[in-house]
Amino acid sequence: MKPLGVLLRHHPAVRAWMGLLPLIAPFLIALAVFALTLRALARSVPEAHGAETPPASEVPAAGTRRPPAKMEQLTATVKTVDIGGGTLDLVTGVGLTLRIHRVHLPRPLRVKGAAPESAAALLTRGCIVRVECQVTTAGTYASSVELLRAAPRGVKP
Amino acid sequence: MKAAGFTLVVLTAVNALGATGACPPAPQLGEPLRGLSGDDLERFARGKEVFERTFTPETGLGPLFNADACGECHEDPVLGGTGDEVEDHAALVGADGLCDLLVERGGPVFQQHATPLLRATLGIDREPVPSEATVAARSTPDLFGFGLLDAVPDHAILALADPEDRNGDGVSGRPNHFLDGRLGRFGRKAFVPALAEFNRGAFVAEMGITNPGQPTEESIGGKPIPPGVDPVAEPELGAEDTDRANDFVRFLAPPARLPLDREGELGRTVFGGIGCASCHVPSLTTGGNRVPALSYKTVEAYSDLLLHDMGTERGDMCLGEAEPGEFRTEPLMGLRFMTVFLHDGKARTIEEAILLHGGEAAGAVARFKRLADGKRAALMKFLRSL
Image (cartoon, rainbow over all chains, first blue to last red; front, side, top):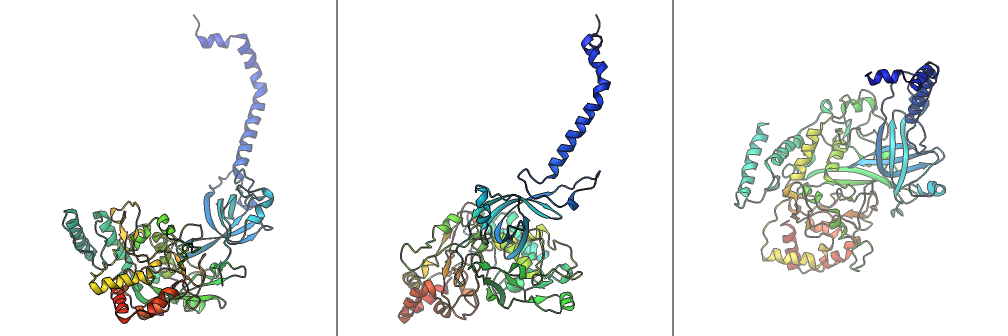
């Protein structure tokens, strides 16, 4: 009795596919390269929420490995809003040492749980937001913005 | 190091008394809470070393600073106590009515000293305060019992709030919140939510000592530190030392109250009767805590840790949601050891401090003024027992 491998090698259907292999191999390799390129491109975009992408200087040269971007969550008070410029300045702190973080907003601007047309109006000085962001050497890029609390009415001078 | 070892042996022996069922004496001022584990006592002793350590520019001090050691200010009558230093905080109420903490100008703490290198480079001997800012003087509080205040659950504080004065007693009490929305409780305006954060921030704001909790230096009036002026790499204090210093503060026992005689008991009744206890709530209870000595304990704080309007005359800066005239009810534990009173240190006696209360306390002050001499003396005796 012949081993199974030998039987299969001599089967007419298998022999026909083996004959086609040299013809379709280049096509299969091209397909694999295309898929890998698409995957790499998808990973270089901060998030699937359409966040503003880091500038071109942040894109690594061909053949080099991109340093992993640091993902951070900031919960902070909004100090200034520049919808046109696409940025928020947030104030965070440890005790009484306070720091300002400039965050680039996603484009188009979306605020979790809010209609797109009202998103810009929700972000005002003094409100508290939670921002998921990617920290790169070029800046901090938000992938999502959530309004936690509207601005207080203000303090009496 | 030998001193710390000796302290640890003594502290362990005293705590062991409690473990054997014998009633240990109440902690003396500057001693740790009773019932701490051996590990926690060791943390306390090591933290004490960090707390009293003097920093220099070579070990990270500055470039701007208010003091060169925690213990330089918190020193009287023992380490962790009060001090005569008064520092400058500042903020501004913006045109929109919101509080501007002047972060981009170096606020809200403006340091009063500069290292020799910074002085030589910029020609300044302190951080400049913006001319349009409202400057607030801040005296040095003692830190006894702060770990217990830290362990009081938020809901216990919020349960005391009455922002709309629904009970109509003229006293409201409302919470302040930190930048991320958490309930604040530490600092004269109840802005900072947790003791550990307050301490990590204080290393930087008061001494310019960066640490893993706040690894970036303060700016110089909002401008970057000139090259070469701060040569020590960040963080200037490691996680271990930072955490131990926090443990020292966290485990400092509140001062034991003095026993009250009949006059003192009368004073306690007067304290409640004229309305002081509406804000200076006699006791709070901690929640569950990893440290048994902090878990479900009653702390005689004489504070509700909420903001109250003290009147426009006492008002200074805003902070978060706290209006210029609003201040957190100052805890009265350790009152008898204080040498100056109120947030700005303006009062030299307890009586003067009472009379300088305004706003929501106006009614209580009016009743205080009407007290017969005997009752007033009794009230003073009670307050001096705290």
